[in-house]
Amino acid sequence: MEDSLHTENHSADNVSRLKAVIETAIDGIITIDRSGIIETVNPAAARIFGYEPGEIIGQNVSILMPEPDRSQHDQYIENYHRTGEGQIIGKGREVLGRKKDGTTFPFLLSISEVKLKDKLIFTGIVHDISGLKKAEAALRESENKITSIIEGAVDGIITINTRGIIEMVNPAAARQFGYKVEELLGKSVNMLMPEPDSSLHDGYMHHYHKTGEKRIIGIGREVTGMRKDGTIFPFFLSISEVNLMDRKVYTGFVHDITRQKLNEERLRRYAAELERSNRELQDFAYVSSHDLQEPLRKIQAFGDRLKTKDYEKLSEQGKDYVDRMLNAASRMQNLINDLLNFSRVTSKQKSFVKVSLDKILTEVISDLEVTIEKTGAEIIRSPLPEIEAEPTQMRQLFQNLLSNSIKFRKEDESPIINIYARHLQRTAHLTATPGDEVAEIYVEDNGIGFDEKYLDRIFNIFQRLEGQKFEGSGIGLAVCRKIAIRHGGDITATSQPGVGTRFIITLAIRQPED
View: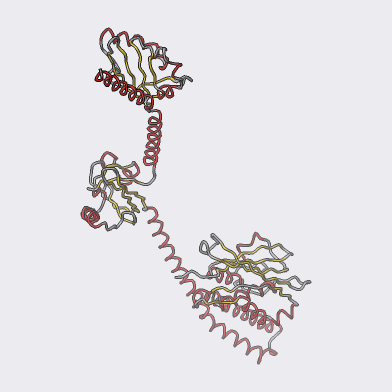
């Protein structure tokens, strides 16, 4: 009696335990009879399909299926009872379910057949794989994006294993080396290298695996590659090391710099040619100016003798000839001196030092004191910055600009010259290095001005807009431009005829280190 009671209690405990497992299971569990009528459903299954358990118990299990499975299910069960051949029973597979709101979702269904004492039932385990499917779809989309990026990349991308065997190569890389993709897969990456790199590469890989010492991996550098036709070309190679689950691979990014190298060489040759040409022009200007001095001195000396000793003996026409000759010689002397000054801007360079532009301007105004008093010029000035410059050239710059403003004054109005500065950062300004600090110096006057369509001309050597009305060689503003450029800047102007001119001079505050 006690044994029987103990057995009954043990059986009851097992049933309770089994029921608890079913009720708390994450996967859905559904039992149907041989006709497909739902007999039991655990909370997880009801939740997965969007029902309350009481809503589906007693219903045909086909209500949980979309078409065409819904209409075909009864026939499927009947065929199974008749033939014993099942499509899912005892096997399991991925199928689609239909929720209460009509939406469908994928799940993994495994069905077992259970023979009780008095009847046959089927138990289905429902494992919702909606999240897994979304993750797979997202992964596929990500893989497709990565593949599209790799396939469409302009730069070459090559992946090799630890033995140097090419596992992946994109079309750009194959094109760069003159191969088809299939010609490279499974081959040693050495075939893309000229000697001695081709023979040394395996040793480099072995050395890296043994010591961890990097030469390119994670660093990148300029190397040379060999095309299928044997030609050599330069490219920048950067390599990343990728640790997969079971192995290590290396991905190389190939950026062809053939065009860049050609442009660099072309630019180098152009710069060398320009430097040579400038040097020849400077030498020519300097030597020519010196060579012209001696005959000019003779012309002036003999002209002066004529005027001193024999001037009164000459006819009026002869006196006119002597005066005109001496005036021409004087103008020629001024032109030669200006030409020498122009050539010295770059040929006689001195080191840059800290210069107070305020102090330089004060000295220049003092030097021009007689001219300023004679013309009644008014100089209005604001504080100017300190910069790194050549003091003599800064004096030359200010003297040329102030003299220019005084010279090209209106006949009925005293010149007013305003000089001030702005200190600013520039991302890129003419010859200044990007990011340099520069000073903009403004020299404004109320003179005769000029038409801005001639702006480019006024800074070219020997260019004059006023013809013979004003004295000068047309070199002063050209010298100003050379000085400004040498000091990391440039010069430009704004003007209106009859209103005046404003010169804007840009100068780097700190000169770049060599």
